[in-house]
Image 1: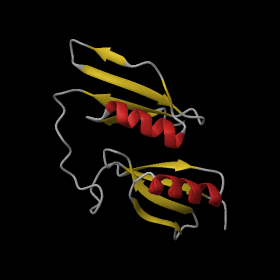
Image 2: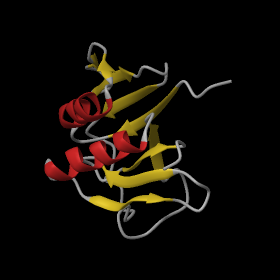
Image 3: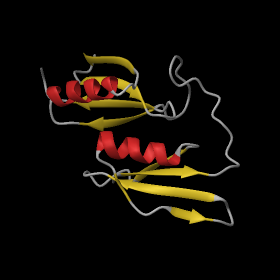
Length: 134
């Protein structure tokens, strides 16, 4: 069994599509638009076969959770795996240079991964990780 896709509500549909395409290699499909429901979405496909569905609709309320400073119950982050420690470092540098906040790392975790945490334009937490040793 594998996770087929995860879905993210956003008021920044186009910005998130560009972010996940540029930084994580997501390939966007055609935009879906249901005018009756005022719903729009993109599916972005990744090399692994997994997908992210980005969705927007005017009736979805803002998320009141503080995703940067405080953890909360529920799904808290998405992790992207890369092949090498250098790839983790390179991605952290690229995102930081482009103005995205690095929340922690890059660092070796207690369970032996090398990773950093960041946020997307909607403040959803992301990790970039590798199991390759230093």
